[in-house]
Length: 296
Picture 1 (cartoon, one colour):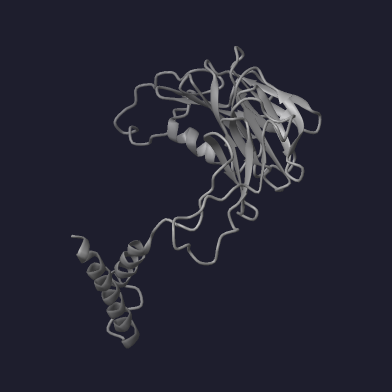
Picture 2 (cartoon, rainbow, N blue to C red):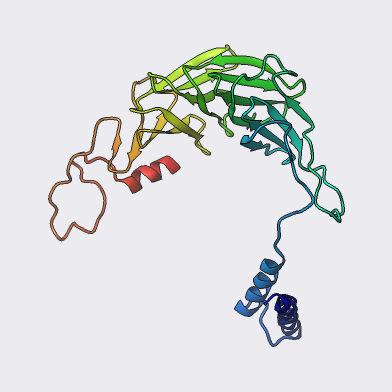
């Protein structure tokens, strides 16, 4: 019942205080399951969504978000009406409002009217520049990838793609390149790497049998990129390799290296059945081995 909720909260606090008192006086060890359980239960009972802040763009539905990792303060929002909004999530009132929170407008928003060089189609993806809040990248259904200057809230350069852009991605650990990976609709079904320094595509990764939809850079190696597509496969690329093919391909049924699909494993005796490693005859790596290589 509703009237019993405050009583349960008081019991949790009393149990936690008794556990702390026992720990201070000596009967209880510093870390016991009882103390940990009481602390966890008390924390869980006080968890609630913040009612101090509500963000509302001046436009259509929000399609994508990106919060910068340097100050963890500025939030980008791409909208279906081709606008990009910038919010300051740290600018919150010190005390909660007595009534419902008032919607907070963006600090600045680039719309079709205010920015004639902005997107003309729905914004599908946005991402902050990994090392500086002065720039960010976006992709839209107008078949354009744009690199923006945050200070002027206008595009610094544009890249044309083959069709509607589904994803843009920049490496957070890169120190030797500033490549923008993008995937879009098109008959080529390729992942394109754009170089802002030269203003056009620097490399194209071909191999998907369907349209690529998702991208992710490796958090350890700045030259490794993973793509996923409508063909139901994930592909690991090394952007330094000027080859037509990926390093690894993962899908529901097979995992194989660039050399070709896996062969059936040879018959093994009962004595060697527990090893689990590939035979020296050149068997393709297993899914676990390929995942470990990706982590390396």
